[in-house]
Image (cartoon, rainbow, N blue to C red; front, top):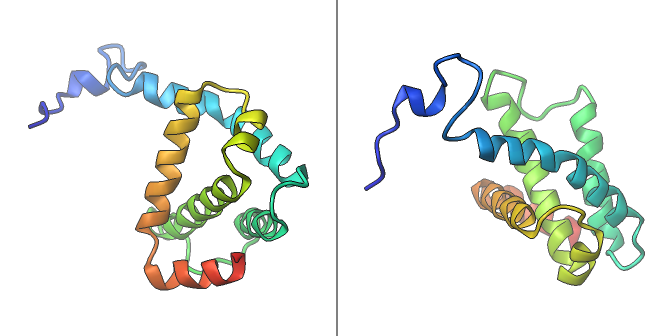
Length: 139
């Protein structure tokens, strides 16, 4: 059984540092530039399937347009965006292959593994009906 979470584990006495989750959040935030570079490099790489690239570009386009399948109700409204990002990124990583991903990734392998686990989890949380539709498009 996990240890109960105490307030001082999350918020430091000065209110500025997350003691328990701070390193994980910091590592995730520091991974964003490497993740952006990875996406650009994969989209430019001729070894990555065109449909996978199109799915990722379509997802990014969907995120910046005002059109939304689920209105931006706090938390619920961002869920479709997060799940779509997770699915698209997971698909792009899987279809590119380990060698291509490793070649283009500038960060540590631990952070890459963390990202892969997160997008895999997000993909699994997506409703199966929606995932099947996206699978048909991406295949």
